[in-house]
Each structure stands twice: as structure tokens, then as C-alpha cells.
Image (tube, rainbow over all chains, first blue to last red):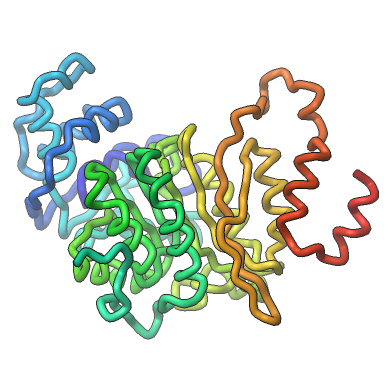
Length: 122
Length: 256
């Protein structure tokens, strides 16, 4: 699971209002090389919740992202490279995503989060 | 030589996972036929709901991949085995998609709303008893409840949330799903539709329908133009002419 995906996930349990972002419990993190594409990053930037990305990257061991980001920064190649790395190259292979409101754990195995709910959560 | 679609010999399998079949091929054929449009559409996020063996999402990534770098692929399935098989299929073709085990797109709807540029779905469309719908095993691949529409209707609701302004949805349906009605329901939400591929047997017809947001739609909450209050007859004619006339349509036509 890339952090781009993590930035798009929120807890889907019925009644939960504060389910984003899911906290990451990282057991195994892998770095996978992805071709750098500035256009893609510039397209995605406005949709990203920056604080959530920074926290997620930290929990995966990457601390180089600036705490805050503004749209003017996407003109900087140095910034884009860090953004690229955090968003696309860090993979959570094994671990869990934890709902901030309920504490419910959504397991991540082989890079795949399991968001299936139990009957009483739907 | 670069293949533009997944190769069957490289597609992974599992006893509880739906293997690529006529409907999968029809959907991929529809995407292939539209490939030039897909490329010039410059999508950022492409998503498959119900990835099964991974045949379709892998094919999509292959056919767009080399000429359009910088596309994020995402696929979901309610069947954990299907997601695992999809991962194997993607890997054996050297392409990547982010995968999620979930019911349709549950968990993504808040943050991914309005972000998906291309959505592809080969849904469970077979009419079955309602209690067969929504399991996590292989029946989830086909069980569609009454008129085969239970899951389709849920998917369409998700699609409306997730699709971007320029979003396109490609979906496989059977005649039994009442595709004319589906198109009318989608029209009421502001989508135009077109059958892009049709395959017929003696008993049934498969239709791959493409949906996109109509430019002239006024939408809810805005002042409705008088002409939009009822579906204009020319739109009805055009929609209905695309589908085989089923007996019950003949009687309801007269009230329009």
C-alpha cells in the first residue's frame, strides 16, 4: 500500500465521523522505485491531505517531508522529489491501519489493506 | 513485443476466483476500442471495482501504461482471494495497481470523491435470490439478486460519488438487468450513455455501457430548466433504440 492510497482511506464503520486519517502500525516497509512524473504529482497535490501524509511517512520511517506545504512549492524539483518518494515509493507491506475514533484495526498483508467490515459494523 | 492486454497464460487463478470469461473479454475489447480516447483523456486515477483474476485492470494498465506514464491504478474486490490473485496477475505482467479488499469502494468514498477519471466494472449481474448476494467467496462474482441489479445499483451510487467531472464509467450488463432503465436512472443523475460493445447469444445479450457526465445537465439544487423536468423525448428515443425492446417497455412507452 502506497501512501497515496492511505491518504484516500478512511474508516468505513457505520456512525464513525472522525475516521481519517488511519494511523499506521508499520511492521514491514519496502521501498519500490517508481518513475518520477511531475505532472502526476502536480495533479495529485491539491487532493492530498498534507498533515496526514507527513504523519504517515514518519510512521514508515521517512522524515524528510516539510510539515507544511503550499501550492507554490510544487515548482521546486527538490520538493517534488520528496513528495514523489513519500507518496509513491514507500510501501506498507505488513502492518495495520487503525481507526482514530474506534481503534479498529484494518490489517495490511502483502501490501493489501483489508477494509471488510463485520456484520455489526455495517 | 509489448502486449496491449493481459495474457491468459500469465493470469493467476484460484478455485474461489472468477476466471476471465466472455464478459471480461467484452469489457477489455471495449477499452481497447476506446484506447485512443482514453489516452487523449489523460486520466490520473483509474479504478476497477471487482477485479477478480486481475485480467481487466492488468489489461488497462498495459494498454495505457507505456504511452501515458503517471496514471495511478486502483482495484478492489470483496473476495480476499481475488485480490491476492489480481496481485499475482499484475506482477506477472510487470504492472502495478494499488489493491484493496473491500465491498465495492467502502473506505474510499470520502477522500476519493470526485477523483476517479476512469472506472471499469464487470459486476455480479446474474439474477439470483437476494441471500446469495454479498458473500466473500466466488458467488460474489456473479450473484446479483433481483434482476441481477442489487450490486449494480450500489456500484452506480459509488460511481456517482467517485467519478471526477470528466469521469468515464464502463460497465458490463445483461439484458436481464434492464440496461435501458439503468441508463435512464443515470440520465437523471446527469450522465449520458452509449453501448460500446454488444455480444449476443440465443438466450442473452451482454452490453458494455459507457457513461459520462452530460455537459447540459442542470443538476439538483440548481434551478431546473423546464426542458429538463421530463426526459426529452428525443433522448428517450435515442436511449431506447439502443436496446432490444422488451415487452414491458411497449406498455410504459405510451405514458410518456
